[in-house]
Image (cartoon, rainbow, N blue to C red; front, side, top):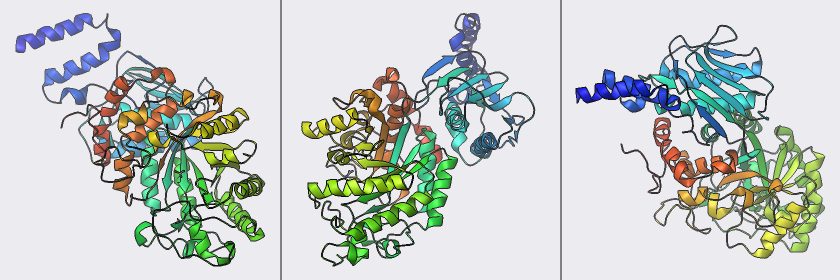
Length: 538
Ligand code: ACM
């Protein structure tokens, strides 16, 4: 045994020069077996490509960097860079127990650096070697995404909130990384069940780890209106007073919403608020009788049916209402987009639907925002620059797909959220205790194994702006529910949105995905242990 190990060590030494790419890994493993103390997995740095989303390009080699109590986080002297440095320190300090000062001075350590280069707005380069790790990007967003990669290159225990033994090694080499799509979204339905600011922040932190950059908040639906509008106060105070199942519901004050926007922005996510119209509006119709064609307010609704409500397209007050809501919401929202829903308007005639969208889309532009709508918007006339969010299935009719393709050919951008692939509220299997199954069962492989670039026939690939994973919450009532349905599928959506199509490979992906399990455990994320994924055994 002992002799064998020595021989193995010598072989490792002999081959080190020839196997430069493997060198750092093997040496680290050798160190572990020589001391016999730490398990090999703790002492071997995570390979540079064992990251989700997988980086665009990885060139491993050279010595690993070891974070020690002397490590500094060095930043350029800019507020934005310092902010990312502080964020990194806030991730690393609890588990390492090190001070990790964020400073513009010194040498070595972890350096965050802004420079011109082929990074785009969100890309970055990560160089790691014996003396330090440098993340270079054109802007703070790229540095932030590079920091997420660095996190995943460290042992999963780095995510814990108490001091862990380490060692904190980062494999040597270079990563060059830039996203495939600019829209990598997650939607949270806070209407069917209300989620507090802290619950939303928790989800934001999980999204940021996978480089998701849009948080779409579904703020209104039949069951609840969740954002305070000063000019129509009963929307929130009455329309927000219940939820599916009859619980107390809730709503965001303007200060709450601003805090979500601020927190999302600190994690480089843009909030996309949605007011779903003209259907999915029972909470508004219940709050103000005058919005109903017959002037009679319906009762609040706590069931899960869809398609029964509509704003009154023929009344002028409807557009005063929509103008006020869009004006107030746009003023709270620094992001570019405002989502106006438009799905399942089964109680609105087609003629009225078109008329409604013709009057409402200019209001979005009037307040400086760009329209996003569910893909039914393509059945009306999408405004110039509008985006349509496709939520169909394999079984969606050819006519409906053709209508989306025609709009895309005419310049409407498409965000892909196919329900039978990436609706995170679909059950994984018939036994999944949460979720719905109207779009089918969506196991992990199914949610990952498709290409946004050639998904919809007739849609030019240049029209695809990205992907977004919606989480509808008819059956979802707490953070643990969100997490069980999002993980592991969310990671796959993130990879579809970020990584080049050339890297797409289920066999490789499932191994990288399996390696996330320890990280989720360290973060307290309870995930679905799909039998399709080779999870490490405990
Ligand atoms: C939707 O699922 N009704 C967009």
